[in-house]
Image 1 (cartoon, rainbow, N blue to C red):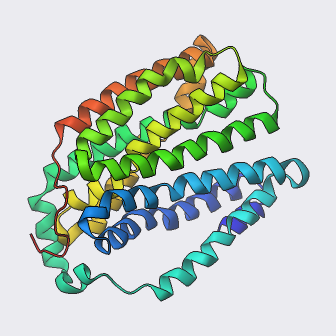
Image 2 (tube, rainbow, N blue to C red; image 1 turned 90 degrees about the vertical axis):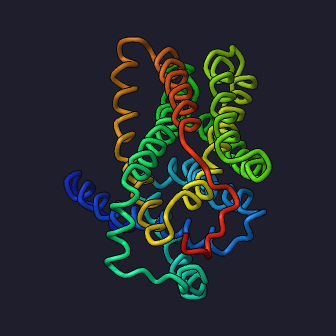
Length: 310
């Protein structure tokens, strides 16, 4: 479907392809995170959680590189053709990876799944709230930032792509760093520290007069934002009941994506009135505070035995 998106003859067909693509992608995260976390020793779960989640940053990094090298010469359709290649690799990997021991032990039936959902609905609502705020944190600092760099700071396409590559390196390092420390500090404390630090970085992220300092601010912002995100796979997997580990993790994640999906449009509308700098800075400050509150209001089960039925 990714390749077909690049072949779309009209905007309507393009939207239809992206809807179908969303169905496939929507099923990946929860199942993949559960499978990966169930295979990792508890003492290293945070680090490998960061490694797993920052596959997102690596993908963003590769996309930025493709935008830098491919888009100026071959246009937007070629970007979708390239985007279809990783799916082939994923299919190969999935055929070689066995089912986790934890799933083999439980193998919940429909009744157990239904009972687990009914018994843990309050937890599910909390997970949805958490993922909504975390998606606002990421999309609120990522989606419109290249537009800000172009329209407000006046940078050309290649400069924007270069800055994107640099701040995605920061994202990758942040996910690994905070994921590692979450095994020592705890999941909630680590995530809250990261988003609070992201809030403190906002002036450096938006207002510097030189491109060097601005790039440093972008690097630090995504280091903190994706640092908090690096803890998410482990945190959600540990909190979710074993019978519905894939369902709770994946559905809460995607509901969070849905709830935050209007972030870019809302920011664009606000930017028409207040400017991109003030809009990005204001939205980021609000969502960082709210995210820290939601994170700290929750609970955690760091180091939980995922092979247990409790």
